[in-house]
Image (cartoon, rainbow, N blue to C red; front, top):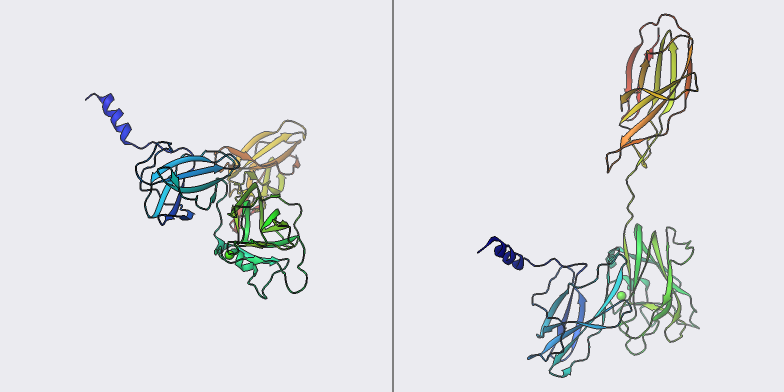
Length: 413
Ligand SMILES: [Ca+2]
């Protein structure tokens, strides 16, 4: 066997990497109806799916249909049907930068007969992950109903599709739209999506199903500004609706209802979900400017001292300093030396009598990702006139260091 053939055979044994996102869905079949269509992250199908085909199958099969955003429904796979639970992994989802919504439905077929399609399952692909319902709290609603009903706001986040928040409808005339529910994410997050599940218990009326909505994001649950997105939800079917939008930072999310699907005065939600992730702050790439530069001249020696930049979380800590000097107060700046991060003094012995010198100090630090040197702005400039004479020794003693500022006391002759 030649090496080329061996490599080719090995290549066939290795599964091809799937492109883009994948999603596994599960469902149950009792031989007549398909129910319980669900998103099953982490699970992979056990069987092998065939491409959907009009060919007649010999046994019962499941036909899986898919809709991406508002594109038409298409047949995506046919798998052998079995009673009980089944799962199938969609490995042909498009890889695109913007989040999108995929809807699935499954039906069982035998020869030319087909079962009714399952209820639809909507999943969102890409963008921030969906927060667990238990990590979000409903903290305020415009109104709620608890007499003759269990319409508490907490019911919209309990993970149970059969419980719901319902705006007040009794006693007296129901309060009109807008209705709203405010969610607290517990911390500031980047929010880019919201899910709304209408009532699943009230299959005849679907009372309170929101058809015109607005979404608000804020750091203050009492101040909202403009809506981050708004639109219309079309019903039926009464599955979950997902809206994605440009990511907005904030801790509080408000879903506001402007109209109910049958024009009634109330609003309800079986569940409200949020797509969000912790706010990421880019690493600092700024170096603070050295402070309190002094220049003391004696004889033909100039002693420079300075302080480290203020400690600011958005600034990098200096790795060292560079001293620059110019003669006459107007010439070009030239480097005269460098110190380490703890070296906050410099003695300039290369000066001439009867000359004026200006000094400033720059701090530097490596870029946290590229390692390139980042420079601070120059410090304020200090100027000395060298009078000449014989310099005596300059003695410097470290007095203290608090982890940031080194205090050095220098004694001039
Ligand atoms: Ca609920």
